[in-house]
Length: 143
Image (cartoon, rainbow, N blue to C red; front, side):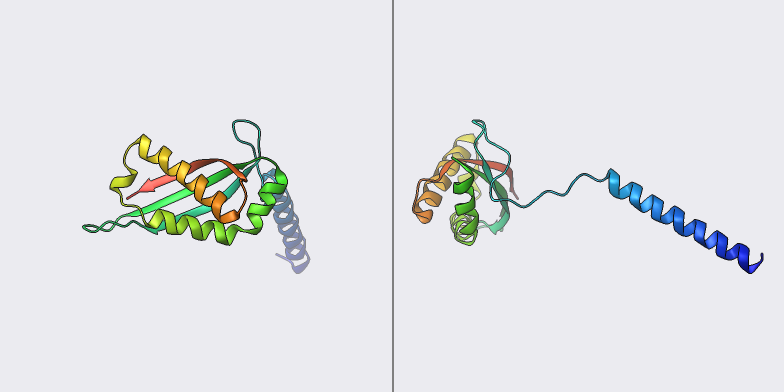
């Protein structure tokens, strides 16, 4: 193959690679913008997503852990922004509360519903305002 033909072939490979890259880029979904308030709860109120938390449970006989992802329903976007600004305090309170539980205390639907109410009360107390309307588990694993 002549050198001119190799250069021409190299250009075509480069053009095809760039075209493929652009095609893949256009087919990707748009990135999610990090926001203190998101989708909406059952009443259409904003939800504040809390990244998953993993804690060791307070079991004496065996080692168990809890992984939970939580969303907080708030009245409006400004409440979500306020919670977002205090996220370190919110996560700290959740870690303290969740790590104080035993795996036995998390058995059954009633126990989980009570925990949701307890989380709501504790977060409103630590924030200093009644901003959290409802708490939802989006992920809950006890192992």
